Length: 452
Image 1 (cartoon, rainbow, N blue to C red):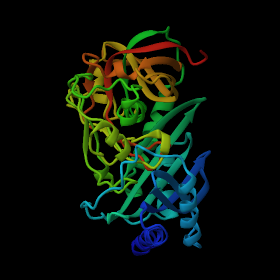
Image 2: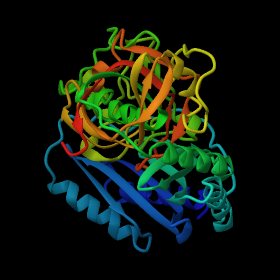
Image 3: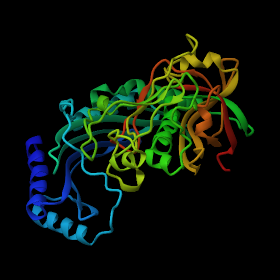
């Protein structure tokens, strides 16, 4: 479906609202999403699927009431609009309605790279499997593309296109898994062979693991583990709704992080030009050299805070205004040189010599929030962890459980070093993009083995 057709649909929905209910405020977002996914297991592709969806989201405010309606078909827009207007007339009063976005300029739509073919993705998978050097492999290669058009009764209108690709794979050796993953603008930017070699190197180096008693240890978190820290900070800490509800530790203007850390949300770099309310997207510095500098708002939370929307409505209701494109842009301060880049991610390798006695962590999983205020989280390591002593990797370790406040993990004085560059890490929320460097932290709280 062309952008012109998406624009026509958004305009038609608004025109129908105005024709039936001239006094209503309304906003329509029309999105076409396309997912192309190639999965592999036992070193063979076993699934290749493509899925395309159309979503029309209509928000209407009339006589002090607000409703949001969604449809995935365009067969009868008149019935869809009539249903939304019928619902809004019996809906609850909405005294906090902030109004629709006024007409404001939106950056021109960027043209994403050409879509991948099944053969393109199969080539990336082939390179990963070959790079693993005969070890059993599994994972996926995917591409997600979104085209969107927006219109509202105030005259705001905009279109946008974005695309992202990701490769996430493991290699297995004697029951031990090693992981490698990478995100990129398109499938051509995925380094299949290099990622396969890294996953295999981790799997081979993980055999013969030993247990380590619980306690606080230095950690060197590779980008895959830092990804979890950043995503939880994005959802729970910098979300303006949770700040207003006093569920977040963030206090704007306060030095709550190590001075080396700057965290930025940059939707424009990902091709996103506006949010679900039509507010222009912009680069937002959340942490500026250790100082909490901003939180994210949609129109409703901004009105409640007496602020302006930062363009972070994600159309997900109770989740609030979530930054989807976060990354650490801190000051790299690791030592030069270091361990081999295939076992250790290249962002982490220069930091290994600075670890006196600590744990190198490839990956976190099954993380759950225990306390949103301090962002205390429990979870497990997986896909390879090692003991590091006097700047040398000396032994693989059995997986560990941790309970750690992420607010304290990046607190002043706890960040010893940041990797020289950030990697884009794909996650389960396919439209989000996260840029994570390695982090050498002074203290991380491990509470026991993987069994408890």
